Amino acid sequence: MPDMEKQPFDFMGLRKAASVISIILVVTSIALLGARGLNLGMDFTGGTSVELEYAEAPALDDIRSALTDAGYEQFAVQNFGADTTVLIRMSEAGNDELALQVAGVLAEDGADLELVSSEFVGSQVGEELKEDSGLGLLLALAVVLIYVGMRFQFKFGIASVVPLAHDVIIVLGVFALFQWTFDLTVLAALLAVIGYSLNDTIVVADRIRENFRKMRVGEPWDIINQSIHETITRTINTSGTTLVVLLALYFLGGEAINNFALALIVGVIVGTYSSIYVSANMLMVMGVTREDLMVPAKEGAGEEEEEQPPEWLNRM
Image (cartoon, rainbow, N blue to C red):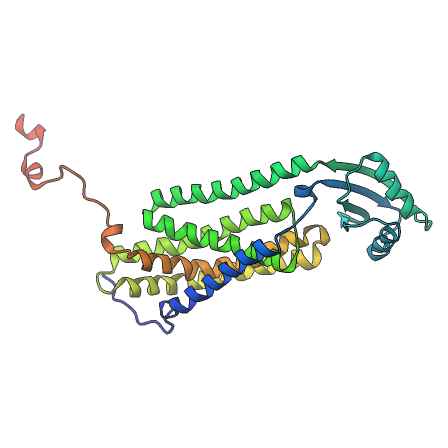
């Protein structure tokens, strides 16, 4: 059996400090959500979206100034796909007449534009989306708990779901702090964060289970620390390459997916931290042992059965 190696860094030695940091971040995020709330986008609050096609790429700041001068409030202007395509999201309830008014205001300066489409989302639909999105997140966490509990052990299921809830709450807290728009793209990013963090957590959990079974020397503290050291390179490489892609999406992908990329950037950073500290901390708190992870012996596989000669030998 492999001996316990002395590691240059004691991850578990910082678990109490990490616990304090996690508690502060989660409590602060919940307080921000209660005090400031989320800046919900039109997908949840209802409103009108107007898509315009310009002959030449317009300056978005000029469009915002024109709409403000015309008396419109609570709107968002962004490019949609191409530089010449502009999407305007407005909190006002309206129809095709409102879209024509907006197009007329922007055409007053001589801009060559065409109204492509307009859509209206009612407040009732927005309320249903809020309820369904919340239920969707809770269902995802419940499915993760059941899967990991069956795949590993119930303690590992708890130690996997707590980090996921930790990550989602902190991402929501950051959006409440900076009042970034929370829409369906950010909701999709939250579900992606759950998947990413779960994958990272399961890699660490699998190594912990393997080491508990093959290492006969060492306390749970040492075995978990050893397991983190064996997976830390993989964790850093995966998170680093993912962040490079997300940063490229944020800076080069356009305003339409900025909030999506921001949610994933925050989620990947927090998820990497939680897969190392929050998950391992939960295992230590619940007192995981070798007995929890040992494969149970098959019933009826006793010595008496082994001593009986095979049936074909009795026929000779």
